[in-house]
Image (cartoon, rainbow, N blue to C red; front, side, top):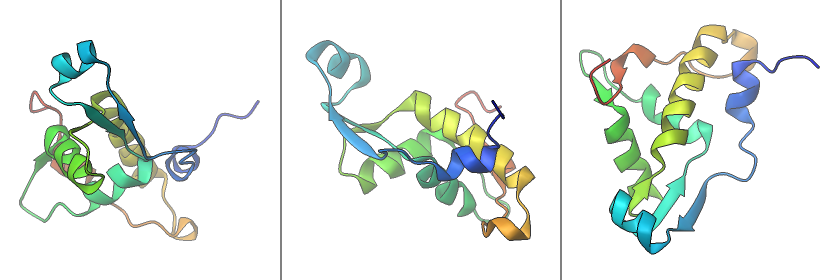
Length: 113
C-alpha cells in the first residue's frame, strides 16, 4: 500500500470538523462542555494567515477554531497533528496542488518550539 502524501492527508477531511459534547470528567479536565475536532484545512488556513514578523501558537489557533465552531475548546491533539501535516504539505506543495505556501515557521508549539 502506497503511503499517502501530506497533501493527500491535508485535503482528506473525512467527517471533520465535528463538535462533540464532553463527559463531565473530560469537561472538568479540559475546561469546557463542547470540543470541536477541526479539519486539517481549518488549521492550514489559520496558519496561512499569520502575518510577516508575527508568530502565533497552537493554543491561539485552537481558540480561533473553537470560536469559529461555537465550541468551548478545540481538540489539542488533532490541532497539533494537523499543524504538522500543514507544514509538511506546504513543503510538498507544487503549483499543481492549488494550495498556497504557508509560513508554517510562524506557528509555535505551546513551549515556544
